[in-house]
Length: 149
Image (cartoon, rainbow, N blue to C red; front, side, top):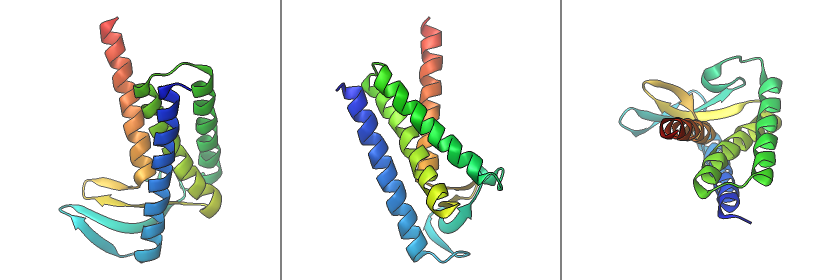
C-alpha cells in the first residue's frame, strides 16, 4: 500500500473522529440557542442544518446525503484505482473525512450539527472545514500545475 493511500485513510479517519467527538461534545454540553465564547470573535453554538453549507437548500437533506455517499464512493474508487502521492492522499482524505462526517449526521439525525460561529462567517463544523480546506488545496494544486505547464 502506497504512502498516499495510507495518508488518505489516516486523514479521513482522524477528520471523521474529530468531527464526531466535537459534535457530540457540543450536543451534550451546549444548549441550543446559547453561545459560549471560545475566543475573540469566535463562539461555540449548537445549531442544526438540514441543508448544505451555510443553510442553503434546507429541504434537500436526502439530496445531500446521497451527494455525500457519491463523493465518498468516488474518492474511494479513485484512491484504489490510481497511484497517489502523500500530498494528494492527505488532501483527498480531508474531503473524504468531511463527507463521511456530515453524511453520518444526515443519515442518523437528519441534520448536520454546526457549532463554530465566527463573526463574519456562517456557522460551520469540523467536517465543513476539512472539505473546504481539501477543495482549496486541490484547486491550488491544479492552478500550480497549470502554471508549470
